[in-house]
Image (cartoon, rainbow, N blue to C red; front, top):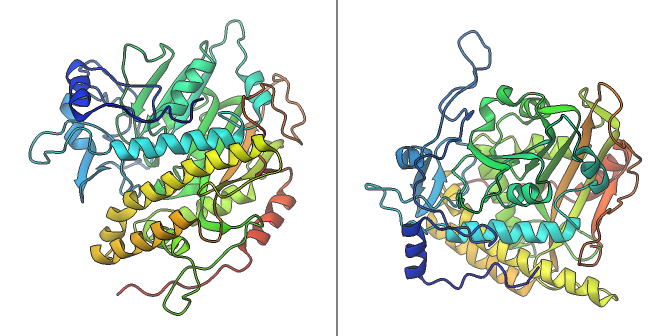
Length: 458
């Protein structure tokens, strides 16, 4: 994996030519959207429905998305960024490169920066996990080909589609479905034939996916979910018996130095606090104000899935993946040092671009633009300086649906076993918790020192 493989050498003219010819880049971090593919169908989406009928029952949509017809309905321009129009709770840019006609008049490559950010983030995560997913031996056993059975993988909140596509390549015998709030830009000529994408809002229910998938992967969607516990039930119901559920989301607190310490946010009363923490805390407050159940997500995933009635508790684990923000970390092993610095460089770019992505949300809830710009400047200064050696923590939780009968190699996963040998060193700050008691104790330790109150909004 080249360190520079995400860099785009295209000029604006070349990008426009790519749009005109319908050519897109799939294996790059900057995925360019081709012009409308009139035949692209996203069947099964619930984008045009509400969650409940008058009788209180879930309603299944048969909505089929056509990009030349629906682009203006699925996205909106906010402060120069493209935001989805399906879910009020998810207010970060979609990165969708649709050529949206007047009156929006959005440049077709306006949110190339968001696509780059998300794919750099993906690379850093893969480096940290040592692959695309945790519990690698178990996932591979579940997805191993079996006569008379089609293996299926569901990627909810697929973003740029990079995880979906890479899974389709790793498991060419499996059907892989990616779901997101906006159209995923794909080149139909190079898209793996076993891969497809749908436009959907998981807040509206997933009954059309029940008991269909061997692996369900949900990454970084917690900020866009209104009632996390209820949507978790919907998502777990998508598993076949014996199927693997994988949750992956962010910790909306930052940590610092090698001891993963919490430093409170900067305020006028605490001028020794962190501006990076302040911006992250304001993001949490903003998401909560627009209806996101981010607190429920954090509590449920950190507690783990052991008490979920649908899952086999012997297969459940939680984990913490700490990623340095900036290339400040090192190790006695040169290979591990290189890994930490490379991942840190990616995460610093992610953090600085991420601050641009959250500006429309902060303005939406009432902060003046000049205030947000001032925060961004302070945050970027700290990020550039790598002040106090910052880290972003990702939280993971996984487990298998209870089987109807014996399932493939439901083995002990008390330690992380990597059945494939990645071309990079083993990442040192990936911690797996084997029981609910350990997970809760680690949560208690992480939360010590938290609880400061942000200044009231003017």
